[in-house]
Image 1 (cartoon, rainbow, N blue to C red):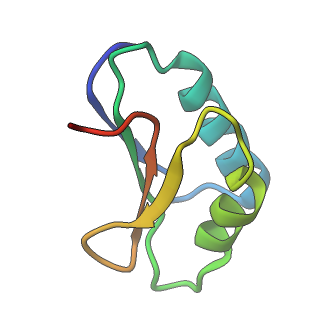
Image 2 (cartoon, rainbow, N blue to C red; image 1 turned 30 degrees about the vertical axis):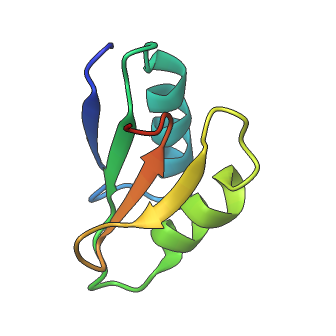
Length: 82
């Protein structure tokens, strides 16, 4: 997967499934991938968002984690856009 901006939808997944999906997306990201836009939703609480921030905050593949354009999205920045 070498798309510059990847979308990953976690709706309907539990925490374990979501963690595996994020890890798989990170592993599949090619050198041309800048960001993974993780869509986790927010109506049922923030468990998925919290898991992403806690489990992947020290992951060496991620430069930084930032909020998306709404509460249900988190963006994993793999490479900076210059």
